[in-house]
Length: 371
Image (cartoon, rainbow, N blue to C red; front, side):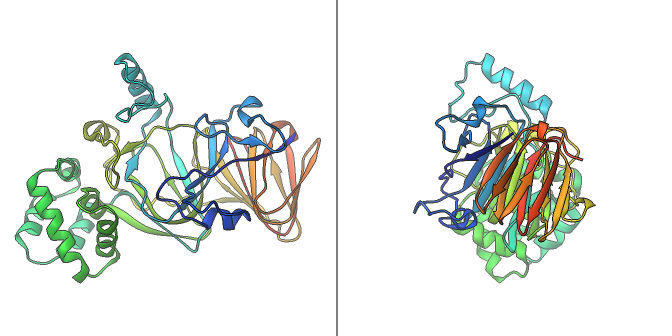
């Protein structure tokens, strides 16, 4: 079964005014368009084309696929593990905190790992903690200053990351003084990390997340590359257009670059402070024109299909959502077929099984089962 679906972009303030509309071949709303959701999550379930119902009335999917367009930086954030989410959700329910309360941390009992595929030439992001030895080298570029020296005295090795992070988030006068000095010095310091400080200070003056950015991997994800962000990975999308796939959850622990609620102690509980390289996810290429990005979790995989004027295919083992951004492309399944143009999205039931794609274009397909 193929069911055409659509949605209305989410108008978060950090969104681009035209990137999503341009990609999908639609009229821009005139305001910010940050995320275009495809899925069954209650926060913004897809509608069924030509009908009044939603996809959530047909099925329930364990993932959401989004078109994400960041014009300005998205808040620093991390997501809980499945166990942390279940415990936190039960705890806040027992405490009687309303689900829509602004200080509520857990909106559901599920984890929220995610990946992002860069559509724009450059998708700019912060993701995960850098080894402290490398971070010290970056901070030393800010020069011989007592406040910089004081930070280096605290930032000794990888084991000092939790304490330094908590200090940054404390909001004390000493942190405010350090932040002001770092922002003052940054324009004269070489490197993308200092340039990021300057940029973030323009959007979020006085926010401790500016200091946190110095501890994190600063990455440019090139078109066609993917980064995977598991539970506990602190990250921020700074600028760019991408396809995001995530588990169907709305659990976000914020860590700065935002006017919204920040629960420092809960964030410390969720964060993974283990320094890691940039978490690129390499695809499997089982056949010509097919790339499968599989993070090794049961919730989702991302398949990118580019038939190149010929034919490409694979075996589908669970329900899916497909989004066409270049076309036309025809999908043929076991029982039906569906023609897609740029901007079209479709729900594909698992009983279509073997899918074949014909045409010249590109389709993104999210599912929890493909081989």
